Structures are given as structure tokens and as C-alpha cells.
Length: 318
Ligand code: XMP
Image 1 (cartoon, rainbow, N blue to C red):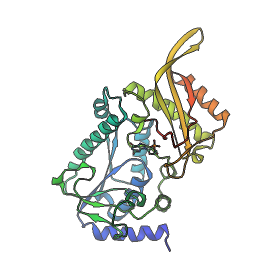
Image 2 (image 1 turned 135 degrees about the vertical axis):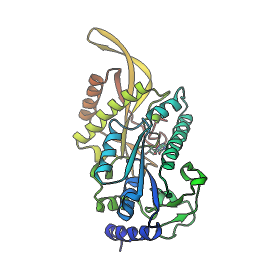
Image 3 (image 1 turned 180 degrees about the vertical axis):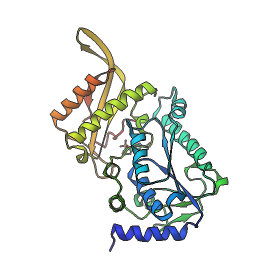
Image 4 (image 1 turned 90 degrees about the vertical axis):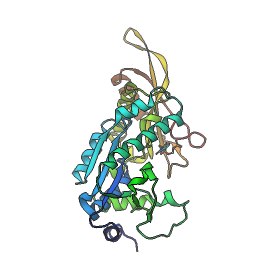
């Protein structure tokens, strides 16, 4: 019978048998559960020969880059943080179409990741946090515990690096990944983190992206997410975030008329993100968050709550 402890023991052995004694492994870390658990398994198997790369795309949550990097270092992982915010902002200037923004973010990520990966001399492997639902469509579902493909283009890494792929979580469902993470003492804040899209706040700022808009949204989002934690609601929703809308509305502050931005709060319950219901959050909580955002984030004077379910609305607005 499957236990996370057995899985850890046998996977660590399998990794040690597969990865040569001097081989280095590169892994892109995102702060999410899957890549973090993959990192801990590899760390247990090969220690500092695992080279983690954590890219700040400038579109993460407020303080997330620093705090996640700190957690990784606390866990003893060999991780290099790369702050590439400026490169991402530069690639996004003037783009308003959601798909174009996604592409620009994806392309820039590959460029930065490639650059960093090239610096790891003697790298032989690219590790990925792929889990079972990610591979269900693909053919060899019942492959060996450590799946090895001679695959060159994943992540856009150059052919000349000739990296082999290692995917230690390939046989696991999400809840099993969490159990394994728990067995490896992954901190609660990473283990139970809400899903967060790769393009990050880039698809929650409707319209074009500027560092100023990112700052506004990060501060509003932090008030919402911290509020969910304070009110004991964080674990009751599947995903939550704030959308910065590309419209201004009139308000009053003291004797002054204001004309500032609107944000929408989004929180959903779901099992897998394929369908979702808007979370029926308590009115007193919504009132608290709305007041706090409007009082503390100059530039935002109106907060609305998204009461659309998926389908037909998606979780993200872009
Ligand atoms: P939607 O908006 O399609 O989102 O209901 C479903 C889930 O997917 C996430 N999402 C993304 N994740 N890259 C990602 O890595 C993306 O481009 C992307 N778009 C949506 C979304 O946050 C939700 O969890």
C-alpha cells in the first residue's frame, strides 16, 4: 500500500540510481507545490548537485519572491534567485491582448531560464514538477517510476545542452504530492498555497502592464489574501486574487472628487479548476477588505466582487 514515506524512500533511491554520481540537475522553481516537492526529493537524493532556478518575473504577489526564496534557503536547497522584473516589463510594454501578453511572458521566461541554466557547468538533467494529471493525455502512463525521455526542447532549453528529463512526481495526483511534501517537511505556506498562474499578475492587470499598475495590484491583492488568512477563510477557497480593471470611476474623498481605478475581487471554490463556483464570502469580510483597499491604496477608489461561476466565466479575467 502507498504511503508518502515509502514513496520518498523508493524515489530517492531511484533518483540516485538514475542520475550519475557527478551529474548536475537543473530545476525551475515557481513557489508552487509541485516544483517545490520535486526540489525536496531531488535535494534528498543528490544534495547540492540540484541547481534550482527561481525567476522573479515582476508579476508575483507582493513580497513573494523574497519570502519564497527565503523558504527555499531555509530548507537547505541550492537555489539561485534571478530578479528579471525589468526584462519582463520591457517585453510587455504596450501589449494589451491577453494572448500576446502570455506569449511575451513565456518567451522572456525561456530566455532568462536558458541564460541561467547555461551557467550551470556540467548540467546533464532538466527536472520538472510534472504530475500525473499533466501526463494523462500522453501515452506511456505506466512507465518506470523515474521517467526518462531524451527530450531536447522542453522549456526551450537549447539542443546543445542535451539535457535529459527527470520527472519524479509523474505518477502522483495532487493530494499525493501534498502528502509527499508534508513527509518532506515542506512548510505549510507552500504546501497549502492557492494555485497561481504562470503569467501571474500579468493576466490580472487588464490592458497594458506598467510597474505602477503592478504595485497598485500587489498592494490590493495582499490586503485581500492577508484578510482571507486573518478571517480563517484562506483554506476554504480554492483560489483568490484581485483584478485591476482598465477603467476609472468617480468617487469622493473629503471635499475632493476623485477619478481612480476599480478593482474586482475574485474568489472561487473548485475541485480542479475546470469548473468553479464564486465563493460566498461573508459580507462583513468583503466590507473589511473593500474599506482597507480604498483607504490604503491611493489610486483605487472602488472595489467590486465577481459573482460569476465557471462556466461560462473563467477564473481569470484574461
Ligand atoms: P481559467 O481562467 O481558465 O483558469 O478558469 C483555470 C486555472 O488555470 C490558471 N491559469 C493559468 N495558469 N498559465 C498558467 O500557468 C496561464 O496562462 C493560465 N491561465 C489560467 C488559473 O489561475 C486557474 O487556476
